[in-house]
Amino acid sequence: MQPPLSLQWPSEEATERFARRLARLPQLANAFITLHGDLGAGKTTLVRHLLRALGVTGRIKSPTYAVVEPYQAGGLAIWHFDFYRFSDPREWEDAGFRDIFASPGLKLAEWPKNAEKCLPDADLELEIHVEDDDNRRVTLRAATPLGHALLSELAPPCANP
Ligand SMILES: Nc1ncnc2c1ncn2[C@@H]1O[C@H](COP(=O)(O)OP(=O)(O)OP(=O)(O)O)[C@@H](O)[C@H]1O
Ligand SMILES: [Mg+2]
Image (cartoon, rainbow, N blue to C red; front, side, top):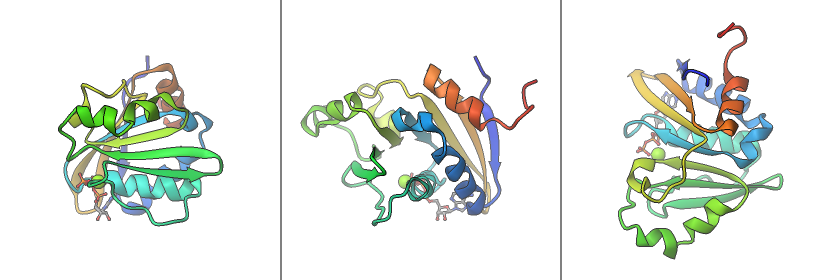
């Protein structure tokens, strides 16, 4: 079991660099990652950089109203959820979210606590804290073998000798 990984993103460029590193990891193709943090912390910003790094070229909208936006990049299926306005668990079945989580692909979810009774366990939980201005402190926690594989790739070398 790895301890949580703590990172600093001093600017949006640092967030983008992290997104590029994450995009290179093959385990990402079947990962479920939850994104925690206050309004405006940078969850959607990270997702946008990650989708671009994965090769998504079209418009990237925040899915606050639609709850989910689907993407395809290089044969990879990606779903970006935002459960900020999610309150009715019946919507889970009606909107086909169960089928999405049963399918292969990358799933990213903002405000997962609003759907925690429906959502499966995340592989990786990423929490963003606003420090000041553009500076973000980020904590990554793995909860599954896949999440641990991702986390060990993201940890700086020699951090845990
Ligand atoms: N280091 C950074 N990483 C990410 N975003 C940053 C950073 N520095 C500044 N920002 C800015 O912070 C804002 C983050 O907004 P964003 O929509 O990504 O937040 P969010 O966490 O998705 O909020 P919400 O809960 O409302 O969906 C953006 O305007 C972004 O440019
Ligand atoms: Mg957002």
